Length: 169
Image 1 (cartoon, rainbow, N blue to C red):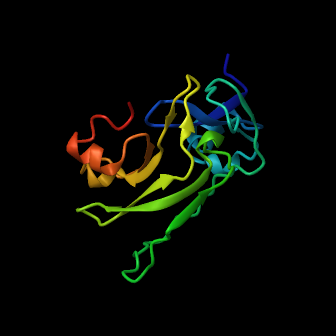
Image 2 (cartoon, rainbow, N blue to C red):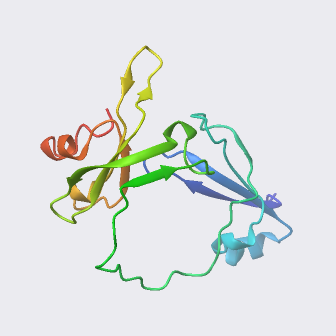
Image 3 (spheres, helix red, strand yellow):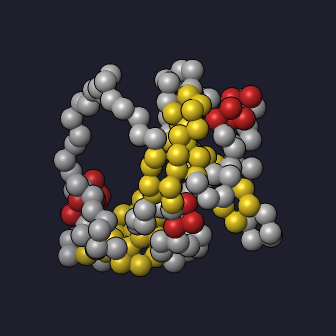
């Protein structure tokens, strides 16, 4: 017997955590298989990870989560922009709250894309009595295949020196 619902999952490609999920009902099996399966924008009630938690198994309804079918147009980055000296990471539905806070540029820039590095103003408490620095930088400066921003306890210079191998540990 066919299930009477379909499910969309948004999966974090690094840890493979399901960060958001939505169950869709009201369609026949054939409609779901032929059309609905390719239209996550029809799903309106998403559940996402609980902010501030490292628990990958529990999600709650998130009225801010939305998937649209609109596409982003081709965007050309301007050459004449100013990199901010300070960045403030605030609470949202996709970032763990322990990473919130003020980040300030360190003056270090990458040699490939000239991207800046920021350091969190307050060190992160690890729970065992130690405090570690937190850095924000572009992984594309280290690896040609992975173009994403990294928040890690190692800075860009350390990542470049180690060919990116010690970024997360």
